Image (cartoon, helix red, strand yellow):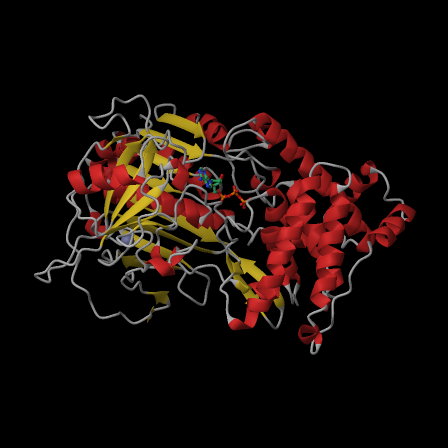
Length: 621
Ligand SMILES: Nc1ncnc2c1ncn2[C@@H]1O[C@H](COP(=O)(O)OP(=O)(O)OP(=O)(O)O)[C@@H](O)[C@H]1O
Ligand SMILES: [Zn+2]
């Protein structure tokens, strides 16, 4: 009896399609390991798997393709190695890489029959969704949170895409709660992780506002924002001492003394609240030395134990030590990067001890200043990483469901494909539904898509408008060109001389073209066109001096007739409404609700944060 006897008996003629299928699997973590095992055992012919991460000890309880000996090795490569032993006939190809890397182009996506997501963040899911829509490849997305899970099939033009209905966006905290009047541990953790960490080691908040901070300026918080800007300016000066022995001291004095003194001067804020108490560097340092926390070895030992709740001097010692560790790392990265235009940064990762130590100590010191309960490193890891324990069995169920739906897609039996939810009792444990049709107003799948290869240092916005949009695609000058900000519209032509690179458009960026012309006969204009920008390799350019190559002229259909605004709630899911036409003055840095944010620099950090005022805070992903 051969290995595939049973599969042939069960699937009949359809088995040939499975055997000839070429599948892309994105993510080789909890769901990914289960999924790969299923694909390999079911006899899928060729599976490519992409994962950017390496194996951590904490993965081993459920990511069973990995063992102790694989810690710190590539998930993708080890998963391939282990799974290929289950069925050597399957052709497995592994990539230790980010799926957003330019090597994974639209034409590469096109070469697959099906893409299966086993990811842990919204940002990458959205990216893969868009690539699949551009490449016209069906996608199966799956996810679990503890005992809950879901999977769904996405086929361009037939079913809902991943973004047809807005996924609940992260709950944001008013900036004044985080930066001026924290009252819960979570406020201090968000401050340490999303504000202070980024200011010191990551992307400056002026360049990219962290998602948890709501920066809308209202009369209520204008005064606070003015103060915060002063704080930012001062912190930039402190950063001049980066990498020196003085640096931890200057940061400490700045955020736990100078800023707190300034807050205290806002007398109104403290009429009904307990005023914060600034910390004195010399006094705390002396106390830490007296407590024996004067050597790095002792601090390392202290930080290694994540169970106890550290006191003031312990937090102080870990704070200073982790700043030194992180500064050294960043200096090294900067030296390695040399004169490259993209400055290296550090990104918070709950599994990265240096970053977690910093966030734990900084959050606790702030809690002490504001008289808020402090937390252990273990607790802060959970809260800052938005973890709900991953359950192996939920992953296994979801991965199994994904494969049964993959059979249907590959056998052109889409009408029987389902979306399935796994819930906890008293709700039904498994509930399946037919695939909802695409939302014609969706800003992601209800639009035209194309890829354009450009030389971002050569192509100017003016040339793009004239030579691509007007000459090749028949637009008038009444268009808006948008990335995460407005680049051009009929009343805003300041950027026409600038090159793509000067406008921050580079490999992997998305550019949206909005047809603003209103035909005289009242007929609808064309739907938005979203280009994915690819940096040009050595492909020969066309007649335009190699600044761009447009392989295919995209078809850009007319907009669907406007419908009445749908009701906002439908069985607990928010229904998308037509994207409003944007005005130049509405366009600032961020425009998440229009789904046109450039995808080049998303950090994948997309948690839903739920605050329970009664019982403190908890987070879910
Ligand atoms: N942009 C991306 N490109 C490639 N792989 C990605 C990308 N984003 C996330 N992943 C991978 O998706 C997988 C998701 O798996 P999972 O949800 O089990 O997360 P994990 O990091 O293994 O576990 P945990 O977060 O619970 O520690 C991870 O292995 C992660 O590296
Ligand atoms: Zn859609």
